[in-house]
Length: 281
Image (cartoon, rainbow, N blue to C red; front, side, top):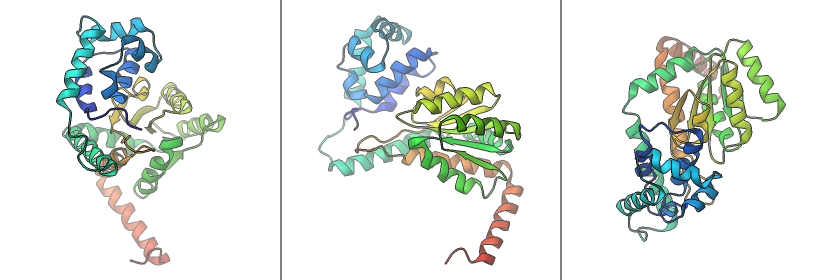
């Protein structure tokens, strides 16, 4: 369930923009984003417990953001909460969940103003032959969705959606076959195996691109490129509208990186589909 109330998590992210945070401090930042409305009324000890860090770490985090201590940071959080407040009675719970997803898409659209960055990611992923795509647990359906379409324009897409010892084997096999980059879907609640796999991929020399829910998610510690897309948390289970949209944006960038090859492969697929009568329309 969402604990952010009527506050806007992207307002909190502005607090961290341009600040070099340690891994522990990124954990605290991510905790504040995930509990945006409640965090403004929690003590330093309570934030420390939620984030799984020490209370002095919370104080140092506040000072890293330019505040005298946590009380000053909490006052700032309350200001941001009040500034982002909306009418809680606007629509029913289901409508509010959908409107929250619309806001997530609006934030994603704003991030995509830097088209050159996405284009660079597309070129890097297009050049990786094979292209391993990692997604465990909640990330598995998005990895499969992306890979289904990517396989129409990329000659060798390998979905890594099972954990265990075989995951490391498949990473090694991809590297041995010539892979240079890995696309990973890292979504709450952040499977430990996913983060372990990101470390192993980096150690193997792969450039790691992570689609995740926040710039300060745990994936940021292990990825070379972090592409954030907020996850909706207003229903019993998370909504992944923005991450799925971002996945297709990345795929578009891959297509744009090699337009002639993309067109050739799409035409070959359409010819094969027509010959086999795969589709009704």
